[in-house]
Length: 109
View 1: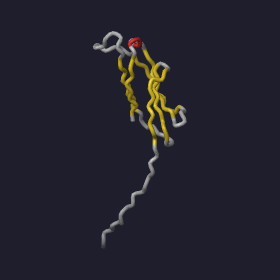
View 2: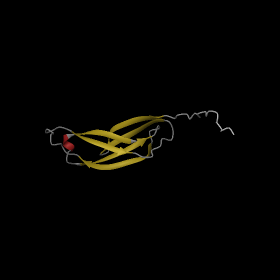
View 3: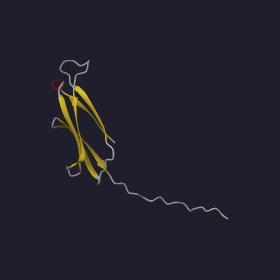
View 4: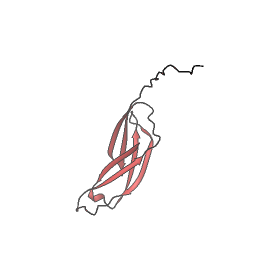
């Protein structure tokens, strides 16, 4: 699984360092153990016109994440302490149904 987001960066935030925090809320909106933090700096692209916002692509692989109970979980993305995005997902429990095996065939003697 990976958390992927593309954020818009206002022009006045270019050439500044920013702190990003990504986390996960459980079905009761309580923070779970997933805690991703990092820093980035934005800059206008060579084609940008004065005053145009930029884009900040973020992609973070997440390994071994488990959802303990079925329900709605929400990934959150904060930049500089402000929540910029939230991505809800729904975890469901799938029943395990045993698959019957056909009669075993034993070679005749």
